[in-house]
Length: 203
Ligand SMILES: Nc1nc2c(c(=O)[nH]1)N[C@H]1C(S)=C(S)[C@@H](COP(=O)(O)O)O[C@H]1N2
Ligand SMILES: [Mo]
Image (cartoon, rainbow, N blue to C red):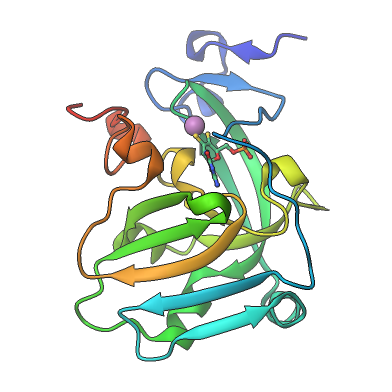
């Protein structure tokens, strides 16, 4: 079986879901900068802070309880700026709207800054995180996230290139000002909409 299929070789109903300049892949590549962090359930926490009425912090046990309560399921396509796309990725976890409901961002919150292990950050305009396909995922395709795909939790923002979907998530910051993250400071587009081919700064 071929790993990559060109848009031109796909049936129409699949081709129309593949953004310009992307290929379809059946396998799930691993892509990130730096080493894979080790998950320690005793010290892991997830914090929500910045322009919010309620700052939040969950331990691993607490976040698992929230996950059980919510059990948000999203099926979404995944587009990496290096030109691979995967269709119908199944994510499960906590809807981003639940974070918003609990934290209550203030009027001036306009950006979401994801904070991950080893100081990695990714900035996203709040509007993309308010869509109902955005979540903090703990499982992918029925299985807990593997170490290399973001164990135990990652942000998933399906409507933007996958570099916004920060693996090994430890914090969500609501911000009034934009704060370009790791990939954005290293040449990738600040917003990253695959349907507009916003790949690099200047696109
Ligand atoms: N913490 C962290 N998350 C990250 C990255 C990274 O370097 N560090 N890379 C991003 C990029 S460029 C992509 S394409 C996706 C890939 O996710 P995957 O490895 O699960 O396919 O993760 C994103 N999340
Ligand atoms: Mo990427």
